[in-house]
Image 1 (tube, rainbow, N blue to C red):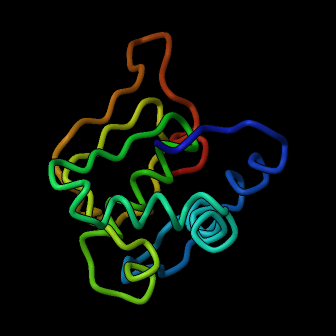
Image 2 (cartoon, rainbow, N blue to C red):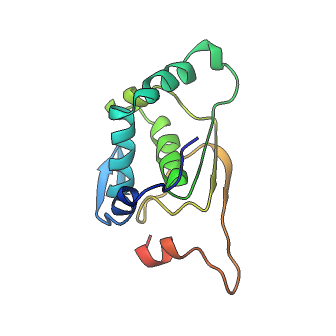
Length: 137
């Protein structure tokens, strides 16, 4: 589970609007990919979680999920896990399902290959998720 925005520092990564090639994926939101890189390299709990996710202890479905910024990070982790790159080796697991809630798009124009699951967000005539629209993603 990837957590959404919790402090002002997260907002800066959300509005780093440049795109980059990351984990073999083209035109990925640079702020989101940078945030996931930071988690994979600097968060103490990530290595132990990735080890369990890659082990036989987790031999059923691996479900990745997140809300808002966390949904963007979950989307990138799930897409990266489907590939074979140096970043995938740090990630150490392949997601079987992806569920996001109120997550913005993470790539500009490129369709990410992610496992099954679902993307849930508000969409009606008066309430449209503004982040993807404002960021032109």
